[in-house]
Length: 339
Image 1 (tube, rainbow, N blue to C red):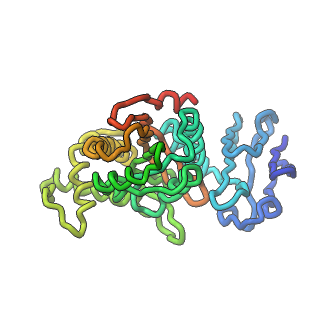
Image 2 (image 1 turned 180 degrees about the vertical axis):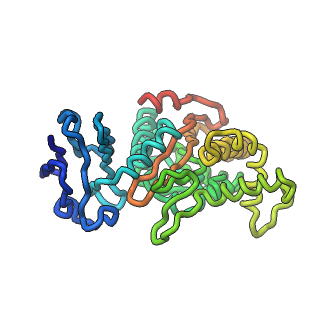
Image 3 (image 1 turned 135 degrees about the vertical axis):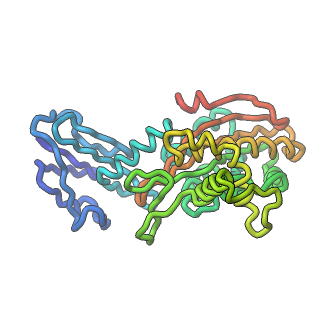
């Protein structure tokens, strides 16, 4: 019985003892400790299906008394592939279990690009995004920028399009003659290396932190209002106006969040519903700014920020193409999910 590890054209074999991976993965991988990782398997396990190939993401579980779970990931900063521990694979499984259909950022961006190219969204397409201010979300923006060019940022705390009608009007004035518009928006949620949603591991910080902090803070405020120790304000503080609006818009969704199986999974779904309505109102009020004949592809979804060295995911919840009168030309969510 053997496990094969492939690194480009080279093959390495082990029969159950710890593997010295320093020659396979020159980059330091602290989680393995001194460049070694122990691969577990049962002698009764069949050889077929136990080869870890060079595809971007592979999850394997052996049907045996001992389980091996391995994953290949390509860090966004490098083309070199890394082997991750069981914890990381559990993270991917939890992401896909709670956000079915979620794709890694670059896979999501590539899939959107392929679908839009079929509908003549080409080099004249201008990108706008509405994601949370948190720096952890820039990798998704970059994946989209790599394919669609410079990005007009509409987003603020929790991902709400706080640029508003004025910002949308400015964006519309930048659409090339005869061009197209692509808008991608949505909240985000973290998952740490232990599989906890609502938390994330950040670079250079030993302790995990809340993610999305704005969303978690708004949920805490909603509980305080429910308990009578706080109130929803209609006159947000100018110096913290975005967070006050997040609190105000989230509060009506408190019960559905509390009734859910996992509040930190339901929280971004509730925020996405808020943001969808917010975005629809901006498009309606700013319709006169859209150049005549311009098609608008608009995508709403949830970012899932994963542990360090893993690529983040995006779960697409809606995908439509509108005309310049804000009418739906095509609903693409079923095509996207089956493409």
